Picture (cartoon, rainbow, N blue to C red):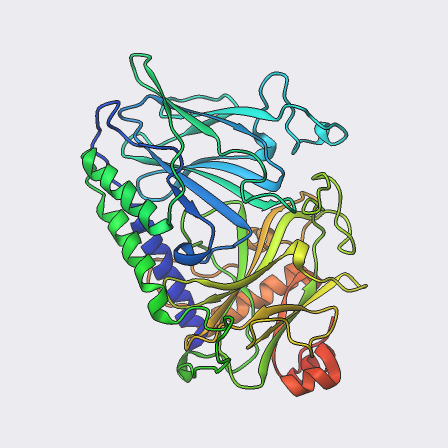
Length: 467
């Protein structure tokens, strides 16, 4: 049964990603210990870094840190022009030990934090901050605690840079200074831009040189990157024939896929601030499309340059910081075919979105004007849809975060424990009850029916009530 297999696939991916980050460090001498350069790994969901269910609206930069050799890492940065930033620390087993969202980062003296309400009416000339990471117990606001043993990873995230900005939101990557126990300090030079596989190889070489016993983790990640092209990812590309491979029918959902929440999260350097609904076992077929519809939560209008407090048009008051819908390949290494972030999703006059997944590279001419297009990955494996919610407002009670809080998620038992179709259906019904009109409803539909009668005809044919 497709949903149960999907759950197992995601769990295996989560365990694989944990294995990627499994670094058991043997302490190196200060001066030899990682990092050799600042932020060597960049994950943007493109090319070889398209693995582990990425969202292309977010870019992650990661750097290893040996707190056994250095007592602390000092990170100095500038708040960018972007929807959201965060800094997080992960331990040797890939578990997050601490995180700092932009709202919680205190600015340097003389600077303002543009993500804080008191800065909404001001345009700060200085937007600087300083964060420290280390093993000491420290309750200061700008501190990232790392595990007491083993190597750590420090990860910097940027979501939705403003229009016309680079992926860093027009600000340089934060600088890194390492401080040894005797007070000696070393400022780490920025890494030179390089391809993702080359960056992984570089980190692996340095870990081995520093005496790290977990360098095999970098080898595993490099191997995962290498198998991406072999599984036929993104065959709906310019110049492609447009033909659709036939997936194993035993892995395909025969009924409209229902979105449900999972009690665990996979992915590379998982983000605890993000909660998601998933629907899997979705398979391509000639002249068949998928239609997804739901109410759009309000979000900030930052992409065209507005402040974090300004709501985007049509979606109403700000209900959460960010949301998106992504179409992924269900098979490892779990690449993304396409995403539509909130700002690039078309919202109708009633405040609802309608996504259409179809086997085409460019937006088809037959698509309704208020529908958003997602290309259907034509590889011969089922697709997986992911609806992400990030940082809902306290007043918004219909988010995926509330679904999780109400205990609607599945898969929280022992790893490998089977989840029945009945449990998945119960989880989907629970999520729908919590989210109301914000719950995404998805149906298969004949393309000609959609052209003639729109999404309403598709939902009527599938026996799903329209919103």
